[in-house]
Image 1 (tube, one colour):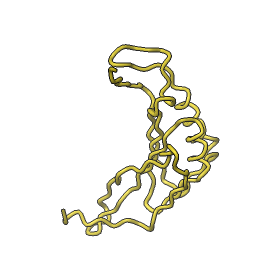
Image 2 (cartoon, rainbow, N blue to C red):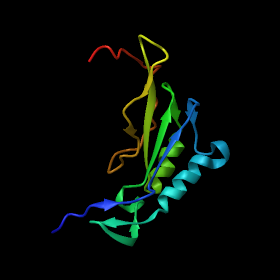
Image 3 (tube, rainbow, N blue to C red):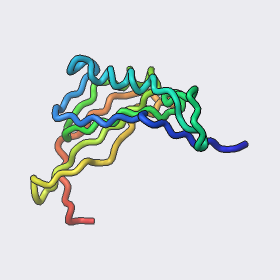
Image 4 (cartoon, helix red, strand yellow):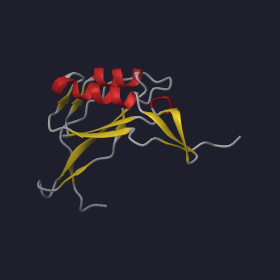
Length: 136
């Protein structure tokens, strides 16, 4: 059996939020619209050959990447809606340097929708993350 390598152009959206609470229906349904779009992405490459019948969401390739301030909260409704539509939600939080508050970076992303037999839970981050970048 030949392994398949799938590539889905346009199956990922990165959204940067400056608010600590992100809900499903905020900003005129922006997040919901992103999820709806990603769930409907059709067409992709199967081992380098274009196949218009491939679905990104059916192959686990549709992703909404949220970047939020540390201490932020993702509404569990987002995770539930995305999961029911085959879209992964990846959340990354900003981190501030302990030695210089002007230095910031985006932390490692966490997949909130890994649901193969796992209960979907909302993710609440801890308080602000201070990072000492001088230590390796």
